[in-house]
Length: 210
Image (cartoon, rainbow, N blue to C red; front, side, top):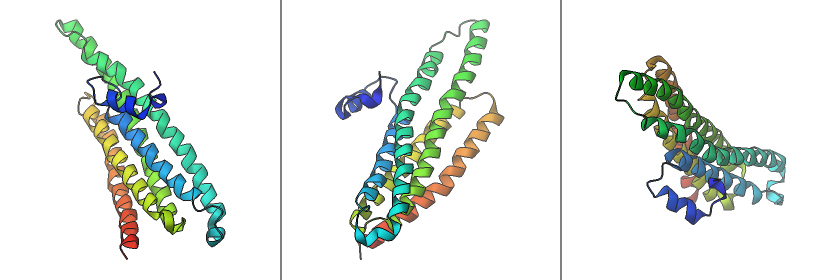
């Protein structure tokens, strides 16, 4: 099943159910894609306006980046479901005997690493989206600056949401050195880009509240 080809209603209903996928990771990727799309919207409302002729080519470049990023985040909705399915199956493996316990531990370690890879990638894409929103908010049409603000909020939420999917999986890893490497990578992105997103939002807010 291609989750991104479902209707909004269908996706939301499955998300609300006890089905293992889609879950928080896929939802985060989708929110990130929506946030990125709002950046493209700002660009579309800027291009062609005489007032913004000086930045038109730059805006077009940002829109191309946003288009690619949006597609990548949508693909990560699917990829997150793909890597979570083996993890869900591994949790259900028997562990009655010593051999079964050892096999379950071996498989769990493998699938946990795969399950961490996607939310980390979602986080990376969301950081890129926040960078784009900074540019859209500063250089795009003032009539669409609120959309840049909403977009950066979505990107921040997706960043934070994906991080939780990293941390819940690293918490179960036996290889603690590897787990801490992933945790540090996620925490670095959180520290830098939640602040960056808040700065963009604050500028948009102050601009609208003049």
